[in-house]
Image (cartoon, rainbow, N blue to C red):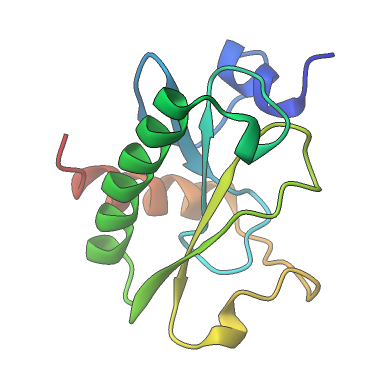
Length: 132
């Protein structure tokens, strides 16, 4: 069954794209924990992160590193936190979240509501810092 991420990959659902290759896609979370919260996914629909074959796993992590570097340069923060939870959508994905404290990665708290115009600006800022 196609997940919401598969529908984003196919273009059926729009996204605020940060970066894309033949195998991976990075886009803004539209209900972020913090501004600049990005989701990074393999395009192949695999539910569990640790079920990715070695090549896809390594490639996803290298792609994630490039995106995290761009986030760090574009969004004021101490670090970019990484979380792999995998329960909310049955499609392997990595959360990249700009953080200043460990409390900034709190998935059970309220999510931000950001206007589409601001999401466009955030996505553009991150894309401008990509080194691909």
